[in-house]
Length: 505
Ligand code: SF4
Image 1 (cartoon, rainbow, N blue to C red):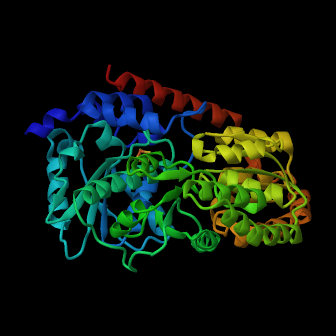
Image 2: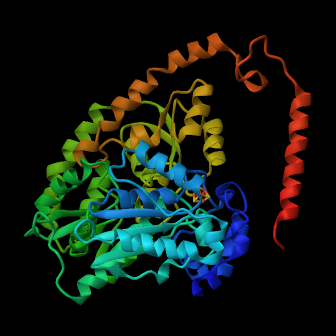
Image 3: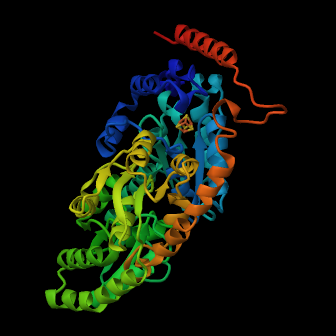
């Protein structure tokens, strides 16, 4: 079987280890199996920082989520059962409305090439044009490392587009960037279709005004706010990319400019640039951010300066008033992996908060440069590709009144009796842009700050009960057993040695 020649047997030995170990080994295996080109492209698009991979969920979740949110799209995973279990669980935890497809494998089907045949069969079975516009198939770590050649799948079956992508944890640093992998692949496909002839119009018809497409999975009210900001400029908000439907991809490409509201969509930006569209960085956040964004959009879309000035006059005093009426008087550290961390920090600073540190798992790009520059000019330390260690060090260094961060940061802060808010669920689930964003953060932040005394009381009451060796459930008084720890560490060292001896040379 021709495909079997591409399969790298060595990679299968790390099946089940994936993100826990063998990262370098998987990368080498993937290169040996003919995936160098795709890995090199990812390394260019998603440069690693001082910390190669910030701790976050499995990156493939980003691509999976983008596929599951689309109408008439089937999304199928190819990977180890444990990875698929975790990804399916997370998808449904976050309210996926569609099922996750799975082509299972074992070492035998992987090394004989049968897995690829199974994927091909699954894709043919799914490709019913009455049900689907597209079938997305995602190679996870082991199939990517083994060289399962998704590029050999047909590009379309019965008119249903087939999109095969490799999204390994050892090649795509964050789930945010994995959204870009699929969004970019879909835009590329849609662009080539549009170049070949007429394509489907948007469901609600084409807007008569020139549109600005929005890049980033923003809070649902934000595109409406952005539309209201664009209206006096004679423009309308176009589709949000990642889109909810295939035909929206054409409408997204058919814009005058693109607002890179989230700054990590490198592959998607490349497709818009190839279609001749200008890309505007940052977002209309707070007073200064909205002013600069309206100017940048005006320049990109050739809007007369007087019209831009009138729009600023209409919106900016109201935004300033809303910010002033909901002040935040506190020192706040902030970190996350959604890509909107710098925007939230701007809003906090304009609300009166002192923000000494912003950490983001995302890389530095051109599209967040205006936000970085604005923040740095106000003494904020911006850390791209921030690891958990960086975020915890900032917590230690700045002793904030409130920490906004990922789950482990929030947990650590609460242990220290510092009020804390989880970025993903509590901060990015709120409007950020224009008038709606101004002041929207302060209610949740000021409520959390008011809990400070409660944390102090709890800490005083519990003291160090349940900490260190005393954590867990004890039927009698907690007792330190250093000899158990020593024995367990010995066992771990033995296991590591045995694993090393089994590794292929
Ligand atoms: S696919 Fe995701 S969960 Fe599985 S090994 Fe790779 S990074 Fe880890």
